[in-house]
Length: 332
Image (cartoon, rainbow, N blue to C red; front, top):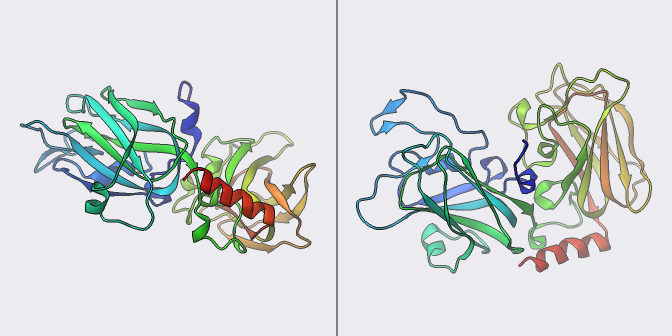
C-alpha cells in the first residue's frame, strides 16, 4: 500500500500465523488480549453488544480510576531483529489509548509471565502519542535479536492489532544443520523478488506450518500473455538440497500446470528441478538429483496460479554453517 514504511514488507514476527502468543495482560475486561496478534485485519460489527458492552476486535481494558498503565506481553513466533512496530487502533475512536511504548527482551527457554516481569527489558519504542482509528507506525533502530515484546498503553483503552515486523534470526543450537529446510522463513530465508503478488504475498510460501486456507499461500493474477510467474528466495545460508516440496494444497481450479526450480551460488542460474507437471490440491515431493551448492532458489510456475508452500530440505555447507551461526551471535 502506498505510503507505508518499507519495513512493513518484512514478516510480522508476532503473528499467530507464525506461532506468536500473547502470554499475559494485566487487564482485558472488554476485549481479549489474543486479538492483538490475529493475522487478519480488524473488523467491526455495529450493535454487537455483549454483557460488557460493544464487542471489539482487539484488546481493550477497563477505564482507569487511578494512576497507572496497562500492559501485554507477546512471545514472538519468530525470534529476530525488530525493524518496526504497528500499534493499530482501527475502530477505537473514543476509547483508544493516547500514548504507548514498547519494550523487548531476549531470553532462552519458556519463562512464565511472572518471571518475565522481573527481567531487564530494553525500550525499543519510547513513550509516544497515538492516533485513534489508525495504524500508528514506529520504526525501531535496535540491531539485537529479541524473543519477547511488551506493549504498554497509557493509561488505558483499546488496541486492535499489534504488529512486530522484522527479520527472523534462527538459533543454531536448536537446529540440525545437516538436515533442515533451507528455504524456511523461521531458519532465516527471505523472499528477494517476485513477478506478481496480486492476490497474496509470496512470503507465505516459506512461512511455518501448513496453509489453512487458500489465502495463506501465494497466488498471482491470471496471465494474458506468453510469460510465466516466478519468485526468488534467498536461502537461510549456503546449502546442498536433497528434497523439494511444492505444495498446491487448497488450490484446485487455480493451481499452476507445471513448475521448475533453479539455483544460484555466485554466478548464473542452474537447473535444480526440471519443468514438472503439478496436480491441484497436492503436496508434491521431489528428490533432487545431482545436487549442487546454492544460496538462492528460483521457483517458476507455468503459466500462473497459486502455491501454498515451498520447501527445500538439505544440509548446510561449512560456509553456510558459519553464516547462520555468525548471524545469530552478531545479534545476541
